[in-house]
Image (cartoon, rainbow, N blue to C red; front, top):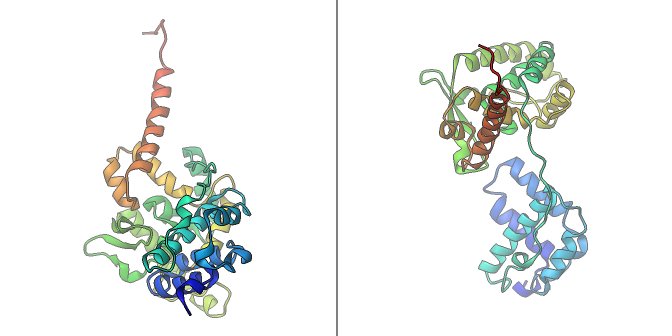
Length: 290
């Protein structure tokens, strides 16, 4: 097939199988595959690559509401066109000339101390108790915790290897503190108790090497039942907030959570400090009592 005869759909398939499938982990691959299969219009896929204009891409993007999914869809198309441009399949990356997708990202909210206390009480009878505590104690991402294997835990050096996939910084080591060690010991006991039930298919099937043998979507659903006003990712935000309140250096916090830059960390720290300043300023009076 000649380069100029590639349709977008054909190229997306070749690009995915050649450049993404051999290199990325299942979760990342699933996200890209969904952007191609579910969020790229069929009429757009049928167009010949060299004939696609920025207006065509804008029209395709306009078929979905401004959202994080739309942003990610545009990113996938951009990456595919970028490679096609490098290979001479197209002359330019038309996605560069499309309109930026404007949507207001919802701000994450950390749990207040009162919410955290109530959450702890609800965890007492939850099968996901130790996993949720692990999230609060480490600030790791959902799938980072679910991919930890017992071999990733080094008790001699008191560190845990977190196999991050988002950035280079996300692949890191975190400290195995006494609290985290206790959580892991309790999870091991629970795994041993549930081994027979998992074998009968009652629970998510995972290798025995996995520390937290749970399905990602089920973990999110269970968290919603336990803490309805929040999203699971906000346990990560809560960890960062508690770091600030405990006096942990921002750079250390950034390394612990695996952020590529310190921007998000500093935003949280500034918010916490603003709250502290408001409370302190509220103490002011022209007539202090001695």
